[in-house]
Amino acid sequence: MDPRQLFATTAAWFVEVVGALPTPEDDPALWAAPALGVWNVRALVGHTNRALLTVAAYLSAKDGPAHSPEVGDDVGDAVGYLRAIAGSVADPDDVAARGVAAGAALGSAPAAAVALARDRALAAVDTTGREARITVVGGLRLPVDEYLHTRVLELVVHGDDLVRAVAGASHVVTVEVPVEAVRASSLLLTEVAVRRGDGPLLLRALSGRGALPAGYSVL
Image (tube, rainbow, N blue to C red):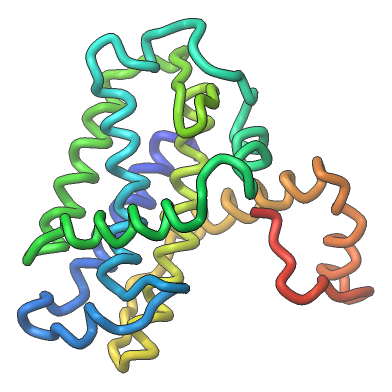
């Protein structure tokens, strides 16, 4: 699937998932329930929504990074980006704090805030040429469409975290994640593993000939 179409489809899924939740006014306990690490449901939604907010912010800034041909360290593609940020670009405490702040910024109508972020992100993508490159967190630079692959991954992984978190709080969301988004994200993570030399380890695990180490992650 075209990366821009895939991003739009995955963003629509995330909007639908958040829209399936009761409002904070109707169920404050759900939004305060534990979700991921130090985050509650509100903070997790806020953090995941940043996958939309950052696209709009990076692409919409006048004379911004998408229009500056020689800004940042070029990482080539989505795999290069994920390898570069793994444990190096952002302080975990800063990431956690940004998630909490982003959750608070959702206000009393998180579903509406997420839908607006989606609309702004898609509008920014629509006005950005295919040849554009974007400078993102840590001064890393890559093609816009490659960055969108990383945003799809973010939406899928944390969207699933959200569905599981609210299920733990007795609220079942039945919105199905797009198969193409799961496929693309799985292939992206597999390529990250292969490039860092973990291909045989992953192959053995997937073929039932070995097990991944406890807590293994390519991120």
